[in-house]
Length: 111
Length: 118
Image 1 (cartoon, rainbow over the protein chains, first blue to last red):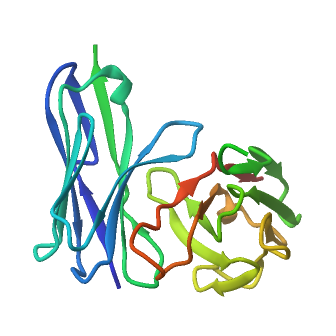
Image 2 (image 1 turned 90 degrees about the horizontal axis):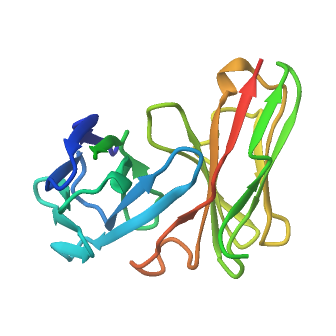
């Protein structure tokens, strides 16, 4: 059974810092991995989707990498802003199956 | 509509009552998913549909939970004889394609329904 963990559980950084969020999964035979952002009272917003054949994806200040063999993905946020404060979730999927989510990392960017 | 919508946004009910949660996916999306999310945890898969067919209901915790999508669009998740342990955020997501039909099968989530069972 696939298990997904995220470290750290919570992170507080001053504005402008670069930061890395980590996601680990136990079964490396994944089809893809998706990073989401969750804001209180709102749905999950998709940030980046990485296919198993890809090493990384970039969108603006966000960069997500995938090392399938070691069961790890990282989300890099450059020049963090207070508006980046949210919970960040990673989810992995096997072919034909549904996403398995991690518990999330709660990020606070202090002005 | 512009995105996935869910109603009601908040539902408070007494133990033993039945509740029905509604999900209206993005127009034209083939697949629809239901998740349950406890506080401080990631969403946990319940069930999903391709069009009107329920493809996987392995995540439904027991037979008090059921879901339908009769016309391949709007879906309803029904919980019968609610219990306090059913209290959670219930999230719906849709995606443009079926699972397994391509890698770029991104899920789009609705705002969720917060269920509280007293």
